[in-house]
Length: 214
Image 1 (cartoon, rainbow, N blue to C red):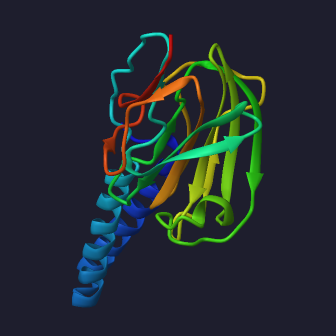
Image 2: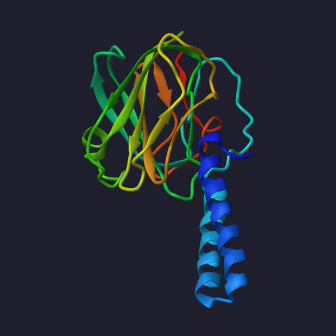
């Protein structure tokens, strides 16, 4: 399956490849042939990048799922008023080779969505969390409140978010996409036991970040 936002880029790539291929054959031009080959490779990469892999979503109550495919950069202690004080921040780096669809980490209600313009530092840098362009979403669920972010990187200068304030959402729902290398973050309250650690590889909607404490 292909993510909907990627279809126009893929169709443009296919059209340019076909036109260039036909023109190279008509003109018997090596330059046009090489151009068509490069366009074909770029189009194949776009198909790979915008893939939407089928995921089996765990439905056990109380689970917090990964919002993104990628590698855990850090798990940090934080203080945040919205989540109720002390908690954990989980930062996930999404390389250009990872699927870039973002998924809802836990079922609940979208409380707010806030877009913050900013810089485009490399997404794995610590300062990218606050200084880069990002989208911040607050969600209320049965265990309290969480925040999750979509953070642009040096290549990803376009964030797509389908979620709306006051929308009821289910864990594993696709809510957005960050184009090319980027980062996702989760701010979790103290009553969530976090299982992941730095360096862990995660898959959106299937990897379990944590669980509500009894």
